[in-house]
Image (cartoon, rainbow, N blue to C red; front, side):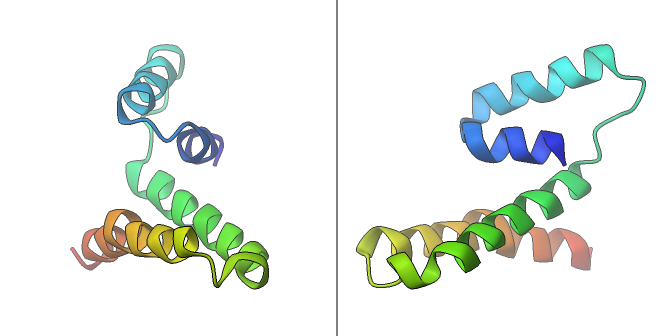
Length: 82
């Protein structure tokens, strides 16, 4: 969950790779990428739920929803289907 949180807040692919590499270098556990993707999607959903009434009519919010669907939710569903 901590890795997913860091990745969601940094939102930079190069830095996210460095975060994962740093984690691998000090941990005896390999990052569970599906678990990270699931937690990341839950964090996005929590944001959407908490902010929907405030920002639903804003253009950026709709664009963000489309981006999250394309970049996070749909790819995760495809991964989980196998």
